[in-house]
Image 1 (cartoon, one colour):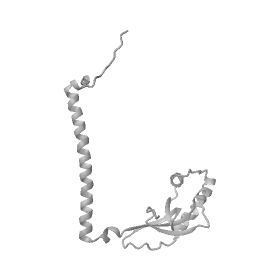
Image 2 (tube, rainbow, N blue to C red):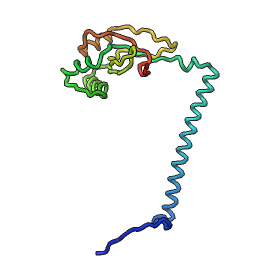
Image 3 (tube, rainbow, N blue to C red):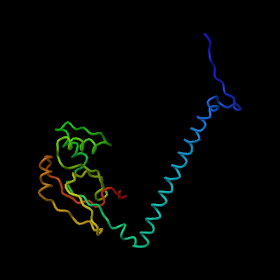
Image 4 (cartoon, helix red, strand yellow):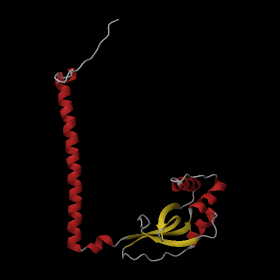
Length: 172
Protein backbone atom coordinates (compact mmCIF):
# COMPACT_ATOMS: atom_id res chain seq x y z
CA UNK A 1 0.00 0.00 0.00
CA UNK A 2 1.34 3.40 -0.87
CA UNK A 3 0.81 6.40 1.29
CA UNK A 4 0.27 9.83 -0.14
CA UNK A 5 1.58 12.76 1.80
CA UNK A 6 0.86 16.35 1.12
CA UNK A 7 3.43 18.92 2.10
CA UNK A 8 3.33 22.65 1.62
CA UNK A 9 6.21 25.00 1.95
CA UNK A 10 5.80 28.72 2.49
CA UNK A 11 7.34 29.41 -0.90
CA UNK A 12 5.32 26.91 -2.94
CA UNK A 13 1.86 27.49 -4.33
CA UNK A 14 -0.73 24.84 -3.50
CA UNK A 15 -1.64 22.67 -6.49
CA UNK A 16 -5.24 23.90 -6.74
CA UNK A 17 -4.03 27.43 -7.58
CA UNK A 18 -2.53 26.13 -10.78
CA UNK A 19 -5.99 25.64 -12.18
CA UNK A 20 -6.97 28.93 -13.85
CA UNK A 21 -10.74 28.50 -13.31
CA UNK A 22 -10.23 28.12 -9.57
CA UNK A 23 -8.18 31.30 -9.49
CA UNK A 24 -10.95 33.16 -11.30
CA UNK A 25 -13.57 31.72 -8.95
CA UNK A 26 -11.56 32.75 -5.88
CA UNK A 27 -11.10 36.30 -7.23
CA UNK A 28 -14.83 36.51 -8.03
CA UNK A 29 -15.77 35.46 -4.48
CA UNK A 30 -13.40 38.03 -2.95
CA UNK A 31 -14.86 40.72 -5.22
CA UNK A 32 -18.45 39.79 -4.23
CA UNK A 33 -17.66 39.97 -0.52
CA UNK A 34 -15.87 43.30 -0.95
CA UNK A 35 -18.69 44.89 -2.96
CA UNK A 36 -21.41 43.64 -0.59
CA UNK A 37 -19.58 45.18 2.38
CA UNK A 38 -19.19 48.48 0.52
CA UNK A 39 -22.85 48.43 -0.57
CA UNK A 40 -24.02 47.79 3.01
CA UNK A 41 -21.90 50.66 4.34
CA UNK A 42 -23.13 53.10 1.67
CA UNK A 43 -26.78 52.15 2.22
CA UNK A 44 -26.38 52.76 5.95
CA UNK A 45 -24.69 56.11 5.31
CA UNK A 46 -27.48 57.07 2.90
CA UNK A 47 -30.14 56.28 5.52
CA UNK A 48 -28.34 58.47 8.07
CA UNK A 49 -28.07 61.34 5.55
CA UNK A 50 -31.76 61.15 4.61
CA UNK A 51 -32.80 61.09 8.27
CA UNK A 52 -30.60 64.11 8.97
CA UNK A 53 -31.99 66.06 6.01
CA UNK A 54 -35.61 65.30 6.96
CA UNK A 55 -34.90 66.15 10.57
CA UNK A 56 -33.27 69.49 9.72
CA UNK A 57 -35.91 70.41 7.12
CA UNK A 58 -38.98 69.59 9.18
CA UNK A 59 -37.67 69.76 12.71
CA UNK A 60 -36.76 67.01 15.14
CA UNK A 61 -40.26 66.90 16.59
CA UNK A 62 -41.75 65.15 13.56
CA UNK A 63 -39.48 62.12 13.85
CA UNK A 64 -39.61 61.88 17.62
CA UNK A 65 -43.34 62.38 18.25
CA UNK A 66 -44.69 58.89 17.64
CA UNK A 67 -45.16 56.91 20.83
CA UNK A 68 -46.17 53.25 20.95
CA UNK A 69 -48.72 52.73 23.71
CA UNK A 70 -49.95 49.37 25.02
CA UNK A 71 -52.40 48.54 27.75
CA UNK A 72 -53.42 45.42 29.58
CA UNK A 73 -53.18 43.55 32.83
CA UNK A 74 -50.02 43.86 34.90
CA UNK A 75 -48.54 40.62 36.24
CA UNK A 76 -45.37 39.84 38.16
CA UNK A 77 -43.23 36.84 37.24
CA UNK A 78 -44.61 35.01 40.28
CA UNK A 79 -48.17 35.65 39.10
CA UNK A 80 -47.29 34.36 35.62
CA UNK A 81 -45.77 31.20 37.10
CA UNK A 82 -48.79 30.69 39.38
CA UNK A 83 -51.14 31.17 36.43
CA UNK A 84 -49.10 28.70 34.33
CA UNK A 85 -49.09 25.80 36.82
CA UNK A 86 -52.62 24.54 36.03
CA UNK A 87 -51.73 24.70 32.32
CA UNK A 88 -48.49 22.70 32.81
CA UNK A 89 -46.39 25.72 31.88
CA UNK A 90 -43.05 25.94 33.63
CA UNK A 91 -41.11 28.63 31.77
CA UNK A 92 -37.47 29.16 32.59
CA UNK A 93 -36.18 32.58 33.66
CA UNK A 94 -35.39 33.92 30.18
CA UNK A 95 -38.21 32.21 28.25
CA UNK A 96 -41.33 33.28 30.14
CA UNK A 97 -42.96 35.27 27.35
CA UNK A 98 -41.99 32.77 24.64
CA UNK A 99 -43.47 29.84 26.54
CA UNK A 100 -46.69 31.63 27.51
CA UNK A 101 -47.19 33.17 24.06
CA UNK A 102 -46.90 29.75 22.39
CA UNK A 103 -49.54 28.40 24.75
CA UNK A 104 -51.86 31.40 24.20
CA UNK A 105 -51.57 30.99 20.42
CA UNK A 106 -52.25 27.23 20.63
CA UNK A 107 -55.41 27.92 22.66
CA UNK A 108 -56.66 30.61 20.26
CA UNK A 109 -56.57 33.34 22.90
CA UNK A 110 -56.13 36.64 21.05
CA UNK A 111 -53.51 38.29 23.23
CA UNK A 112 -49.80 38.16 23.94
CA UNK A 113 -47.65 38.48 27.04
CA UNK A 114 -45.13 41.30 26.87
CA UNK A 115 -42.22 41.80 29.26
CA UNK A 116 -41.74 45.53 29.75
CA UNK A 117 -40.65 48.24 32.12
CA UNK A 118 -43.38 49.90 34.20
CA UNK A 119 -42.56 52.49 36.85
CA UNK A 120 -38.94 51.29 36.79
CA UNK A 121 -39.93 47.68 37.51
CA UNK A 122 -40.04 44.68 35.19
CA UNK A 123 -43.60 43.49 34.63
CA UNK A 124 -45.38 41.08 32.35
CA UNK A 125 -48.26 42.73 30.53
CA UNK A 126 -51.19 40.76 29.14
CA UNK A 127 -51.70 43.06 26.14
CA UNK A 128 -55.33 43.93 25.43
CA UNK A 129 -54.92 47.10 23.31
CA UNK A 130 -52.15 48.91 21.48
CA UNK A 131 -51.84 52.03 19.36
CA UNK A 132 -49.42 54.61 18.02
CA UNK A 133 -49.96 58.06 19.45
CA UNK A 134 -48.94 60.64 16.85
CA UNK A 135 -48.94 63.53 19.30
CA UNK A 136 -46.35 62.02 21.57
CA UNK A 137 -48.62 62.06 24.59
CA UNK A 138 -49.33 58.62 26.00
CA UNK A 139 -53.02 58.85 26.77
CA UNK A 140 -54.50 56.27 29.08
CA UNK A 141 -56.28 53.46 27.27
CA UNK A 142 -59.48 52.33 28.91
CA UNK A 143 -60.40 48.84 30.00
CA UNK A 144 -63.11 47.74 27.57
CA UNK A 145 -65.22 44.64 26.90
CA UNK A 146 -62.47 43.08 24.79
CA UNK A 147 -59.99 43.46 27.65
CA UNK A 148 -62.43 41.97 30.14
CA UNK A 149 -63.04 39.07 27.72
CA UNK A 150 -59.31 38.33 27.54
CA UNK A 151 -59.13 38.48 31.33
CA UNK A 152 -62.00 35.98 31.54
CA UNK A 153 -60.46 33.65 28.88
CA UNK A 154 -57.16 33.59 30.75
CA UNK A 155 -58.89 33.22 34.12
CA UNK A 156 -56.88 35.92 35.83
CA UNK A 157 -58.34 37.88 38.72
CA UNK A 158 -57.19 40.66 41.04
CA UNK A 159 -54.86 42.23 38.49
CA UNK A 160 -54.36 45.90 37.73
CA UNK A 161 -55.16 47.38 34.29
CA UNK A 162 -52.34 49.70 33.19
CA UNK A 163 -51.16 51.67 30.17
CA UNK A 164 -47.48 51.59 29.21
CA UNK A 165 -45.95 54.13 26.83
CA UNK A 166 -42.92 52.99 24.83
CA UNK A 167 -42.81 49.47 26.33
CA UNK A 168 -39.57 48.46 24.61
CA UNK A 169 -37.53 51.30 26.11
CA UNK A 170 -35.43 50.50 29.16
CA UNK A 171 -35.87 53.13 31.87
CA UNK A 172 -32.81 53.14 34.09
